[in-house]
Amino acid sequence: MSNGSNEFAQALREAGLKVTQQRVALLAILMESTDHPNAEEIFVRVRALDDSVSLATVYRTLSTLEEAGLVQRLTFENEPARFEITPASQHDHLVDVDSGEVIELPSEELNRIRQDLADRLGYEIVSLHSFIRARKKPAAN
Amino acid sequence: MSNGSNEFAQALREAGLKVTQQRVALLAILMESTDHPNAEEIFVRVRALDDSVSLATVYRTLSTLEEAGLVQRLTFENEPARFEITPASQHDHLVDVDSGEVIELPSEELNRIRQDLADRLGYEIVSLHSFIRARKKPAAN
DNA sequence: GCCCAATTGCGATTAGTTCGCATTCACTCT
DNA sequence: AGAGTGAATGCGAACTAATCGCAATTGGGC
View 1: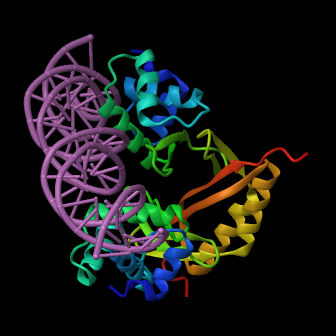
View 2: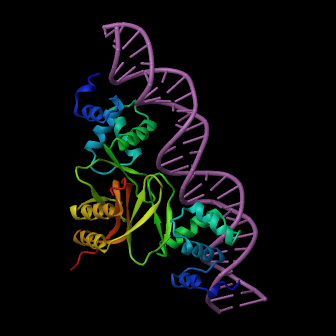
View 3: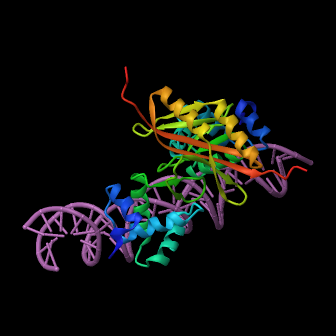
């Protein structure tokens, strides 16, 4: 297997993780997914690449990658967790309550203020989980 | 039953909900709980007040109260949902990853910025779900 | 190439939450 | 106050997302 050569294998090695076919496939899928899929959806997509991958491995690998900081888990209400490749800069999420669509809300200001609040209490931030549920306003025109 | 007279009955009526023994008991418990209990914990506490309440009703009532805006559901990772009486002003939460303790992070600034971001995208905020997982820093010096 | 711990697939299992249904109860209209 | 009615409740069964135990496989160091 020539898995050892691509960029995903590289990332795994740097994180101190064994490079397996399944992990590479999963990273590849996550990298090309812009829609914050959940485990089940990821499973289906990974299967198309490599039909040996099991659902249990998808769950295990997502947890492993999360722990390694390569992936982030988004825990919304009343739905299975969704996942994204860890973004270059932390952002909040807006969930359209009607369509279910997830929109990213980058804001350095939000990050700065939260950093500050945590600092002041003597804490260091491990991870951020922030989403707004919102509804589209009728166009004001 | 003289349930119709107290402040919780009042709140229920204003929300257009039927005033039942179980709902009043549940509100009473939530009101005196400052520790963000989960459904199971609430169940145990409510039982002490009124041992007729079932777990199913706790879940149903919490959902009903949430929908009515009287209660907020906090969905943290890898643990059952927790609940709090809807606070006068919206706040973020900090979860101590070691102790599990939840600390409230009131910040008008955060609220303002998020309001702004949502506005700009043409959305109105339905609810806020924001927590930071953090670890206590070793006391400096 | 060989070894060994780590990883995987599979099916069974768990934990949290919801549901179906028969019974009880809160509120309305006399 | 009393009867009628739709909503709320208790109970246990069911559901779903996620995890686990275990035997088989595999990646990476020697």
